[in-house]
Length: 300
Image 1: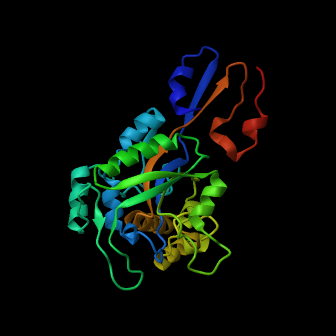
Image 2: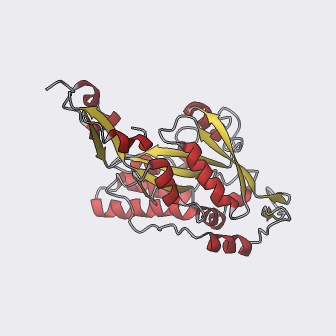
Image 3: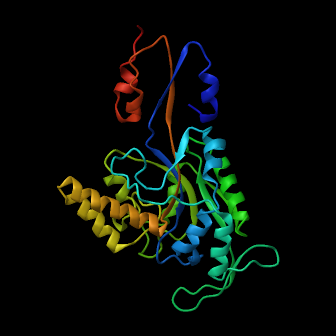
């Protein structure tokens, strides 16, 4: 169901609207490859946090999801019983975000856009404006363009300019994120800075935790994160048998992703579909996880 159509369809006499806890989360994806060559200021968690603090997630929930969503902090989402409840919440505070960017030395230029000072040493950068592209796919099941507009407005309040780059379908957009996976080491995850997309998680958090590992480069990783300490946590949670001990490791792994801002989690939306009252036996909660969803409906 398109989120903006839900309330209208609920008024239809011969239709049942079904709602259940959704597994899909939306996020800002930050290119977190430690060896990225451009706009390296976006590797700093303090900078990404400041930018994230001026994103009005409640407005995204109202405008894009018609209220059928909630804020989320963890990569595993609300669907997982092992979601870490101690993360965040991320504060919406543009004034504090502006102060944080001032503190790290990114002053506003004459046109109001912040400027990153030149750096020295390995992978040094010249002075440049905080102006970035945000990559979006055409394959989302929500209005990513409206989400981008809200993020753009928030960043503008900080003196940060962003433009939308439409990457195409999921395959084309992911190819931009990863770069040339057949090329030499060091050429991957160099072609983008920021993206807006989504993930669909599972009850068990293993898969969602895996996407932030180096082992998933050019497979499931969309951030290019390369953190050996995190990778060890991921491996450990996968072989820990005791449930309470594993929970502690899973929570620690989620905290690493959160603290490093590999993603800025935006929303966890409600799963919604609509069925005719002339048909029964839809198992909406199964969604695409079982063919029963498509094969069992019948007329009463």
